[in-house]
Length: 227
Image (cartoon, rainbow, N blue to C red; front, side):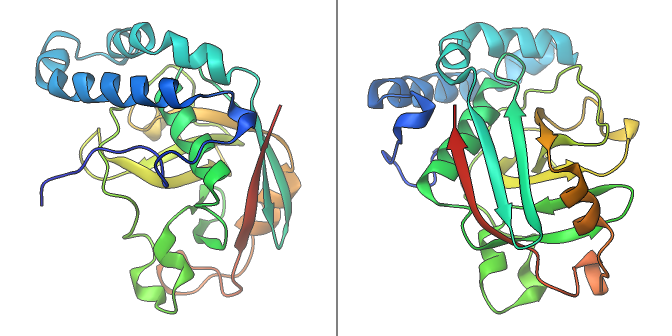
């Protein structure tokens, strides 16, 4: 299937907290499209994460400035998890997450995959239906260029899940419950937990069933974006 390009869950639904205007949104769309067209050449010339990140950051420095200082509160039925973002390291991924949260895209989704000592994963819109078997397989049809960076996957890190291809991120994300160096440079880190690690612990240590699914639903009630 040909991939469509869009970043927002609901096109044009921008809240004031992010400080991103409709003009900024249009510029992001244009720049991402241009970057995708250059992916083959860029990967050939800049195979290392540092070089690749520099290309992305140079193009999206305007976006990093806009969303600098934005934070999020992930409200769950297990408690609240507060996060900050790294727009200088992963401006597109931060923008993607923030604007989805503002639009209400994540409301009612689950942390559908939980592995103690590893991570908790959520953000799949299919987790809102009554079919647990499809959890983890859904999300918007997007192809967000990867922004691998030098931040390590340690406890509390917020990182983006993706398909097998590097530029295959959509809406699913995970929070690290323990360090895993094998993920470094392979998945895009775009934020970290600043408060609520005890909630991450509680979720990570909950009883699970087949497919690492929590026996009790861990619901993302909403994600509040603020400065």
